[in-house]
Length: 128
Picture 1 (cartoon, rainbow, N blue to C red):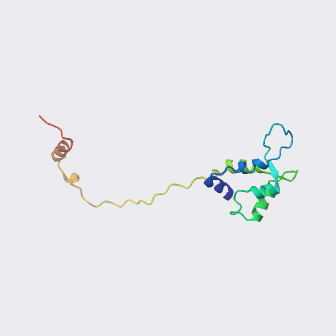
Picture 2 (picture 1 turned 60 degrees about the vertical axis):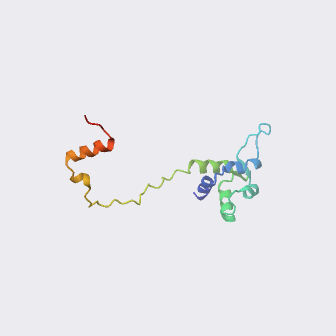
Picture 3 (picture 1 turned 90 degrees about the horizontal axis):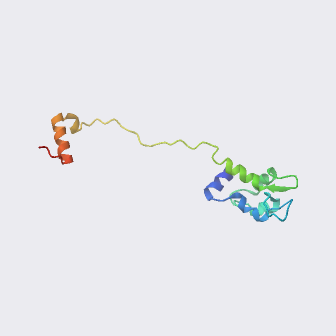
């Protein structure tokens, strides 16, 4: 969650940090990104190295390591982007509290004729 929050607030696209180090495993001519890079390059290109300890980065790399020993950064990116808003947003709260109004306003005690007269004057209506 911390990584997803950092990626969202900083505007970093996680997979773009590692695409230069991507290892194409099957076809070298297409230039497709397969989503994996070596562990050392993953640690070197990790965008939030100051925010995470070395042990946390190692744990992340070990969790998403494939059979060849490469870190699947594309899988991390997919998890971050799909689960960023899985938790519900905070409910809207207002600090405004309405107190009962004990004052008596003029319009509450006015006769209907005076209310009509006030509306005529306010709206500048001509009565003939």
